[in-house]
Image 1 (cartoon, rainbow, N blue to C red):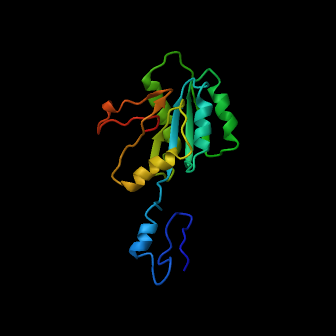
Image 2: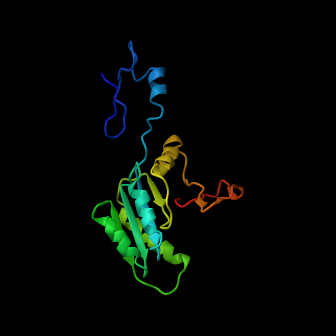
Image 3: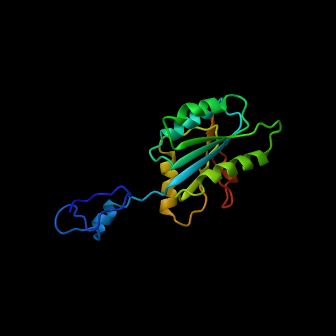
Length: 188
């Protein structure tokens, strides 16, 4: 049998590698395939309020990922600056992206972000995902960002929350504030 993966990422049982009678149970096979983790499935929710200046960078970053989410719900929290129009440009070519519009409101407060997140969560609650990400609408990152985060969850099944430090311009996140109860970054 030839070594290979099926679409779910499961290694074929007793696949032959190299010479001789090596199978999927041999130490050499296990060493060869240790980087072939099955990454968890994920969904994203982005509460966004008046992010027209940055949301396209976030959209470009997510659609370029090497591991795409099952669904990405962008919740416009009463945006009045054209955020919705920018997101709508991506909907036709990316059916896994959904835009929800919350009513406009005058005041800006954290409870609005919570309500927006909950509206997005209602749209993904019945999907078969293993990881949910709360992604800011004003960030950009490289194409392997979610691959990196998901690998951390695959490598450590007890991991409950993950994130990464971030850079803004020339300043880097200050690690002195890191603790077991703190998760940094644009996606938690």
